[in-house]
Length: 420
Image 1 (cartoon, rainbow, N blue to C red):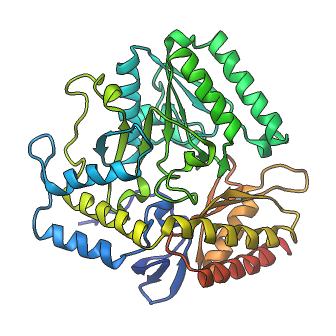
Image 2 (cartoon, helix red, strand yellow):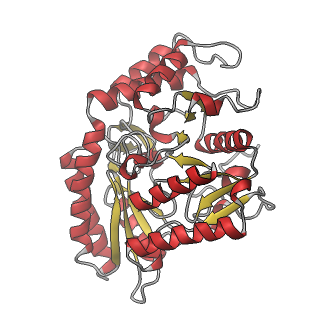
Image 3 (cartoon, rainbow, N blue to C red):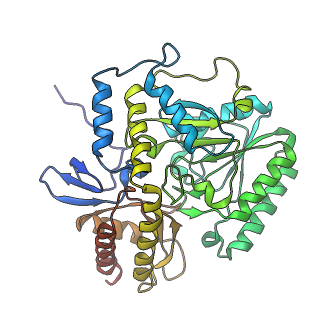
């Protein structure tokens, strides 16, 4: 009898077969050591197998694994809700938990439409919000996330994100353009009376690690207030200290009505959620929130331990400090190579953009350098519409010495590929 195999459509960014992990390190089955600067796409915020997270999860597994939260309550969930109140932006005092980022995005979409009675959502070009039908309909970071299963969900309109590198403009000009085009969209395609929410990432993730800016978010807030539109901030990748502040939107004074979180929330266990005010959450229709595995007891226990570790080990501060160190080191490499045209990001969320001699996005070179780095023991990922950006997204526990080691490997990998 033939054995089953993994779908060949699921592509791997590296050839590593991981056997164990410790902090920022992964080891394969031959015990070869790798610096993991992918963190499971920003998931293992406290590193691989942090002792306090492991202990919390092991203890919970021996007590209660699954207590379906629309059937019975459990203490890890109730405690996590209380603890989230310590870190959520002011006024967001109601939480709903799910499993994945896509589910949380769809919960935010559902709440936005039900609370406002309006059908339309405005997303921003380059944003990534998930792979399920509604989430993919809101995603414009690449066609691979939304093609081949049309028709997508109706009621979605897309406005520009102020990406200075893409447009080739200074950030002020890109911001002027983005806000002007948003006004044009509201005048010509989605009337404010039909618009439920703006959905935006503080930093484009899959779209190329492009930070927003304070004036852009102030402009969104001004228009949201003027027209009664909700501001929904997708912090799936930028939350829990990733950008050097607890929430990425804090860099820009973003004040959302709905915040979406996932990834780093539980250090590798599936858990996501949305937060809103009690007044707004009460406008959700009865029975519209639920799910079989949401707020799993073990995932909640891991999330509580994650919050403890982030606080006790000052990981938000470490993200800011190590991120500045890493960005400076990467810029030194870029200064020696015309192929790297931009080093950008916040905290431990940094992208290196590759372009060819004609100034066009160069995904082939970015991938070649990413693969060369993996051969040398540094695991990285690409992103951007053309795969032209190599991203650094290590666990928040990364040390100064590990940053230096990663930067040295990166320099060698770039030299090996670009200098040919």
